[in-house]
Length: 131
Image (cartoon, rainbow, N blue to C red; front, side, top):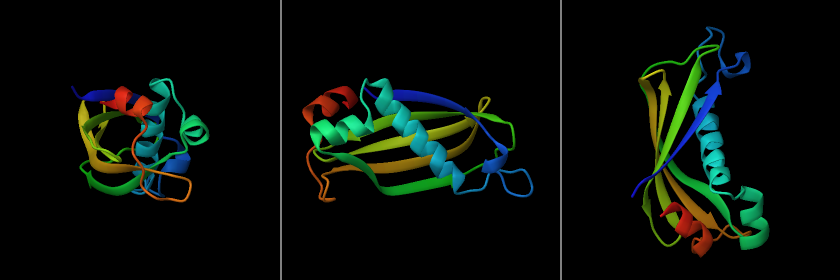
Protein backbone atom coordinates (compact mmCIF):
# COMPACT_ATOMS: atom_id res chain seq x y z
CA UNK A 1 0.00 0.00 0.00
CA UNK A 2 1.36 3.41 -0.97
CA UNK A 3 0.89 6.20 1.58
CA UNK A 4 -0.30 9.44 -0.01
CA UNK A 5 -0.33 12.90 1.53
CA UNK A 6 -1.74 16.15 0.11
CA UNK A 7 -0.70 19.73 0.86
CA UNK A 8 -2.12 22.89 -0.71
CA UNK A 9 -0.41 26.28 -0.77
CA UNK A 10 -0.59 29.56 -2.62
CA UNK A 11 2.19 31.23 -4.57
CA UNK A 12 3.23 34.51 -2.96
CA UNK A 13 5.15 37.40 -4.47
CA UNK A 14 8.28 36.34 -2.55
CA UNK A 15 8.22 32.96 -4.36
CA UNK A 16 8.52 34.51 -7.81
CA UNK A 17 11.16 36.08 -9.98
CA UNK A 18 10.88 39.43 -11.77
CA UNK A 19 8.54 37.89 -14.36
CA UNK A 20 6.05 36.63 -11.77
CA UNK A 21 7.08 33.00 -12.32
CA UNK A 22 8.09 30.78 -9.38
CA UNK A 23 11.88 30.75 -9.04
CA UNK A 24 13.05 27.17 -9.66
CA UNK A 25 14.70 26.63 -6.24
CA UNK A 26 11.47 27.54 -4.44
CA UNK A 27 9.88 24.32 -5.65
CA UNK A 28 12.26 22.53 -3.27
CA UNK A 29 10.82 24.60 -0.39
CA UNK A 30 7.28 23.61 -1.39
CA UNK A 31 8.29 19.95 -1.48
CA UNK A 32 9.93 20.23 1.96
CA UNK A 33 6.84 21.85 3.45
CA UNK A 34 4.68 19.07 2.00
CA UNK A 35 6.95 16.43 3.55
CA UNK A 36 6.77 18.17 6.94
CA UNK A 37 2.99 18.33 6.68
CA UNK A 38 2.98 14.61 5.87
CA UNK A 39 4.84 13.93 9.13
CA UNK A 40 2.34 16.14 11.03
CA UNK A 41 -0.59 14.29 9.46
CA UNK A 42 0.78 11.07 10.99
CA UNK A 43 0.46 12.63 14.45
CA UNK A 44 4.20 13.31 14.73
CA UNK A 45 6.50 16.28 14.30
CA UNK A 46 10.10 16.56 13.20
CA UNK A 47 10.95 18.06 16.61
CA UNK A 48 9.26 15.13 18.37
CA UNK A 49 11.19 12.64 16.22
CA UNK A 50 14.42 14.36 17.23
CA UNK A 51 13.56 14.75 20.93
CA UNK A 52 11.98 11.33 21.52
CA UNK A 53 13.54 9.09 18.89
CA UNK A 54 16.87 10.89 18.35
CA UNK A 55 16.46 11.02 14.58
CA UNK A 56 16.29 13.60 11.83
CA UNK A 57 14.88 12.88 8.36
CA UNK A 58 17.21 14.34 5.74
CA UNK A 59 17.22 14.49 1.95
CA UNK A 60 19.98 12.34 0.47
CA UNK A 61 19.03 12.99 -3.13
CA UNK A 62 16.35 14.73 -5.14
CA UNK A 63 15.64 14.49 -8.84
CA UNK A 64 13.16 17.14 -9.96
CA UNK A 65 11.61 17.79 -13.35
CA UNK A 66 9.98 21.13 -14.13
CA UNK A 67 7.16 20.74 -16.66
CA UNK A 68 5.17 23.99 -16.54
CA UNK A 69 5.54 27.19 -14.52
CA UNK A 70 3.58 28.24 -11.46
CA UNK A 71 2.90 31.95 -11.20
CA UNK A 72 2.08 34.61 -8.64
CA UNK A 73 -1.18 33.87 -6.77
CA UNK A 74 -1.61 30.38 -8.25
CA UNK A 75 -2.81 27.71 -5.85
CA UNK A 76 -0.80 24.52 -6.05
CA UNK A 77 -1.27 21.07 -4.58
CA UNK A 78 1.62 18.82 -3.65
CA UNK A 79 0.88 15.10 -3.57
CA UNK A 80 3.51 13.06 -1.77
CA UNK A 81 3.62 9.27 -2.04
CA UNK A 82 5.94 6.94 -0.16
CA UNK A 83 6.96 4.26 -2.62
CA UNK A 84 9.56 2.23 -0.77
CA UNK A 85 10.66 1.85 2.84
CA UNK A 86 14.00 0.28 3.79
CA UNK A 87 15.85 0.03 7.12
CA UNK A 88 17.15 3.59 7.29
CA UNK A 89 15.68 5.23 4.20
CA UNK A 90 12.52 5.69 2.22
CA UNK A 91 11.68 6.94 -1.25
CA UNK A 92 9.02 9.51 -1.91
CA UNK A 93 7.53 10.63 -5.22
CA UNK A 94 6.13 14.16 -5.11
CA UNK A 95 3.88 15.75 -7.71
CA UNK A 96 3.08 19.45 -7.85
CA UNK A 97 -0.20 20.27 -9.57
CA UNK A 98 -1.91 23.48 -10.59
CA UNK A 99 -5.57 22.57 -10.95
CA UNK A 100 -5.34 19.18 -12.69
CA UNK A 101 -2.11 19.92 -14.56
CA UNK A 102 1.14 18.40 -13.30
CA UNK A 103 3.70 21.19 -13.28
CA UNK A 104 6.57 19.43 -11.53
CA UNK A 105 7.59 15.97 -10.29
CA UNK A 106 10.34 14.92 -7.93
CA UNK A 107 11.79 11.67 -6.65
CA UNK A 108 13.31 12.14 -3.22
CA UNK A 109 15.44 9.71 -1.21
CA UNK A 110 15.09 10.40 2.52
CA UNK A 111 17.38 8.98 5.21
CA UNK A 112 16.99 8.87 8.98
CA UNK A 113 20.13 9.99 10.77
CA UNK A 114 21.09 10.54 14.41
CA UNK A 115 22.18 13.87 15.91
CA UNK A 116 25.70 13.26 14.62
CA UNK A 117 24.43 12.78 11.07
CA UNK A 118 25.05 9.03 10.89
CA UNK A 119 22.36 6.86 9.24
CA UNK A 120 20.22 4.92 11.72
CA UNK A 121 17.24 2.58 11.47
CA UNK A 122 13.86 4.17 11.01
CA UNK A 123 12.16 3.97 14.44
CA UNK A 124 9.40 1.34 14.61
CA UNK A 125 6.78 4.00 15.39
CA UNK A 126 7.56 5.89 12.18
CA UNK A 127 8.11 2.76 10.08
CA UNK A 128 4.65 1.43 10.98
CA UNK A 129 3.04 4.74 10.02
CA UNK A 130 4.76 5.05 6.63
CA UNK A 131 4.77 1.41 5.53
